[in-house]
Image (cartoon, rainbow, N blue to C red; front, side, top):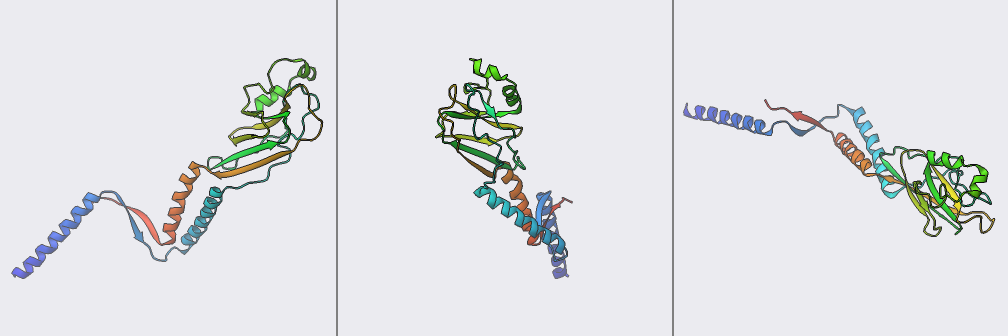
Length: 226
């Protein structure tokens, strides 16, 4: 009898300790191995994880897409008196801009040319200047000294670097002086580099981790206290 009572007491103490341990744990996350009951879910996880990994690799290395041919003017008018001449087409926006950041670099071969980036309002202001006023005005509005551009570069050797932001922006070029030093064409070297932003990593890495857990057959569930 004493042996049976001891076994009963041992079981009660073991159950009490287990219950106490679960109470301390509270609402905690655990991994529970699942069986092969959800093959479709695993296939979707394989596809999702593969796509995310490709985006992470490409976004870390950087992607250089082609640019539309009319985003930057190739040659300003012969006589501008230094006034900016804008491209007719806006710079394309960045797809999925919260996830990707896009930087554009431009260099050119003419020291008498400067390059600017401006928003739509500034472009409209400069385009509305009458033709004769462009040659007679001594103001710096819509010229190299205007402070309302998004970014401006006067040096063709260092060029212009600009991270494309949200909104509508246009490239413009102008002459450093009353006219062109020569009437030859303008050669530009333009490069675009797309990379994952910090927000992109914060979004994609947890999704990739969840996909890997699903592939391995784990699911996440909450253990509620009794």
